[in-house]
Length: 267
Ligand code: ATP
Image (tube, rainbow, N blue to C red; front, side, top):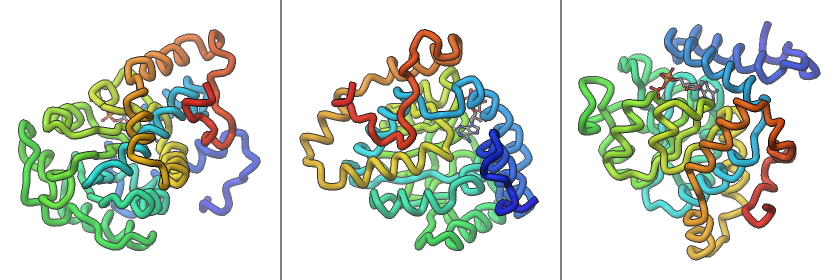
């Protein structure tokens, strides 16, 4: 079945779309077989979170946008799952926030990096970093730690969707502002993040972009207030609570459809 044949009125449309894109990513040689496993794990958590953006995640998405806008060298790190799921959306977020796109893979091969870079360019990207990584993330062995000198290495803010815990920890140890998008609030990656966004990348990336558009004309002090008012621990706790209680203790936890109404002032 192709993407256009997926019935949009199917109750599990988003889940079918995700599976379809990941499968197509594997066929195209941009997503690894390990990526299939990561996808399965993500789906389970998404199910438990109610397959929607919870309010605490919507808040984190706004703060993530503020960080990307405020940074001098923001970078969006792209792996095989993210490239398969949200290529166009990543290009748009990079354009709105002035961020670089860098391909950064756990199971790195030059061929797969090239394919992902080409895939992003097919979806509108200009320059894509990561094809010639000359620097290393300290503390990580071999291929896993290789990064671009002009990208992740010098970045002051990095958005790492669907990252493994080791690399998230190592990036945090480099003192970078780290925005992690991951559906599992118990995973080491969001636990190490400056801003843990507990949401599906399919929903999170477009929502961060929408917030960035709204905040484009915000003053430095407005951005600083948003950033300083953010409580990462509360955000992780809210997601875990949602998973454990099914949201029954927080009937208003789900954000509105657009997800863009969750500014701190609305609470
Ligand atoms: P850690 O090493 O941090 O404990 P892990 O072993 O759980 O992490 P992996 O299995 O390598 O990490 O990575 C998969 C992670 O990505 C999981 O936490 C999963 O919830 C998350 N994930 C998978 N698909 C998505 C998605 N579409 N959106 C957001 N997160 C996702």
